[in-house]
Length: 499
Image (cartoon, rainbow, N blue to C red; front, top):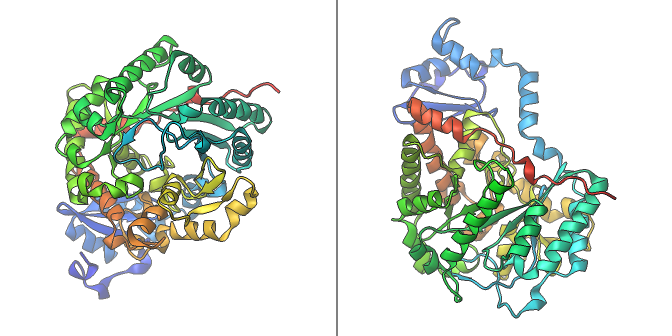
């Protein structure tokens, strides 16, 4: 709704106001500024605000002051410091370093984003020499933290190189002194007790995929040697028990898992959530099918509209909220990230919801042959025959990777302030860009947000959550407060290894 439909533009007192955006949510207007402050106002209050008719002592006037919407009351130095803290990721380089150890995999997942090959193709494994060069580059980041994530294919298929990277990185960190952590994204099919002992001893966080109950999971994640669902849930329970045996808080430490939502899953939101609860998960991250890799080629059978996904998502979150009201503590992680930004004035640094986006300056991906990409998604585009997002190789210098023309273009394209629709969106302070998605779906790094499913997804979820916030049900707000409580998993931070 335009301002002209609410007020006479000739009466607007722009000098009295902090630049803001607005959107109708229910019967009221949501106002937000670039700092991330927000409030809801009635149509009449909106008129009085924009015409600078409020007076000291009035509830509305004081609320507008508290949310930094009246220009003369803004402490510019305080807000600058606040902005700098939330945007601190702009002052250092990539934190997440995704190491693709191999293209080999023993699963045939119908939506796989990677370029997988058969288990006999050891020629697609990352070598120790390439791995060391990649680690050397990762440690040149100006970020105070380095998070190395092992991916594939199935990364456990290249076990010796995985171990070498862990030990080599720990040795380098004896001098670098960074906040170093490791995570492993695995289907768990090649896990055994010896590998698990090593991974737990080296504090490697374990992540997997669980698409729901057995019939749904095994239909999509095809494993010719048996039931993938039985295998993955069995290992999840075993690993979670090991965490308990180690004395770690079971409310915090467990195998991380996420489902990829396909067309057969759209009516199974209750079953998916129940499956996660049954294996001890406290969080579900409802991931939409992406337009990369096999998922793009199988869209005719697995794909769906964004409206279908949003309906699924809202049903799932409503069910999760209901479970919380009944005493079962489980969250939807995407909603929790958004709510942390809105309610807690926090910046979780989730790369898909920040501006500029995470491409290049938040994460980079290392392919087995030493090629370096802007992100996982950039590597997925390359697996489809398009090297648009290749930044260089492990033989290039860190300075070249971070300052070349490709990197600069992606950073600029990932700015909300550079998007005609984003710049006027009420959700701008909490949203972000993914340039690889824009490119793959619309043929441009910048994309066109009003035609973008990326924008539609996030705006729909923000609308849903903001309607909850506007209503302010006390029980639901207590649930959201629990979801947004920051809990640091410091067990996974590496101790500095001896020289």
